[in-house]
Length: 333
Image (cartoon, rainbow, N blue to C red; front, side, top):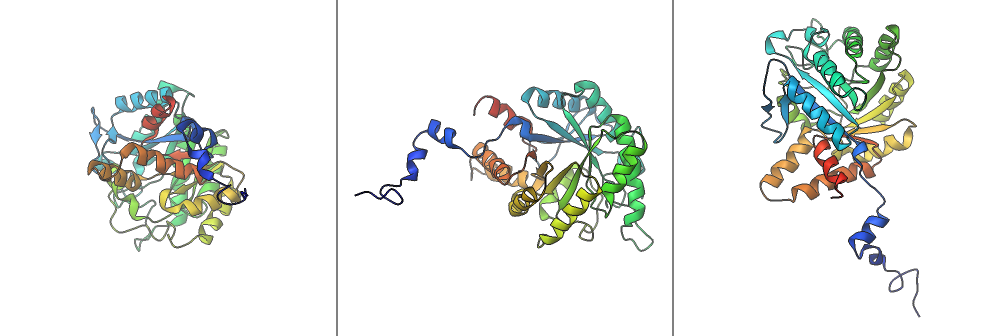
């Protein structure tokens, strides 16, 4: 007599017999609308500049950024996260170019908004590191330490110029205490109540940011361990999460994604707002490098990493493969 609670009566492989069967019973599905494209735009260039550490990713010119935004819309991608790369000569101690209405990020926001309107959620990185000559995410005090409260004043200005440029969502990423509340107040003060805040609530001090430093031409010397979170900690992250929600975050993010899927799942279980995860430059570079060596199947590895992030309950995934994957999903691949 067969026992249907165990083998040989119970045979889970029955649900894996064909591609159609596996597709039907899949618990997690990727969709183009889950994806957000991070994009870099570089001041003063007329052609895209390849990023050596991130094969296939470029620092866009203004023209190619507009084209990338249109391509993302056509693929069904939901959003684009913009990072500005100013000319080195415009970097200074307080990141003046980051609050210049004619700075490269603000110009790029206007360009993309004019090109695609509301068909793509336009997001902007709200941080000073791209614009400071020391490469830190805030202004420094006399001892060379990042001054939290002085930095908040700069973030408030950044939020306002980005909102005036037409951004839909600002992403304060510098990990200063109180940044979400200050940004919310700054936006509301100028009548930009509809601009949302995607809080980098959980952002770890990670070794996987390496290629990103090239992507934004970072001037950083040293590290950011006094403001980004310790990879060993979870309770600290949940505390940061609670504070950001109390200050008015509309959405929250975990960054990086892949090494922190346990944290992502805990965050998703803890909140009633949309949760994003950022598959960062090092995660991208590892897959591309291994695929170039012939060690892994590139396309399958990309989908597997993204499915894992989605399975851990990220509703939105920032990934440099966003448009490519959306196009493949639309074709049923």
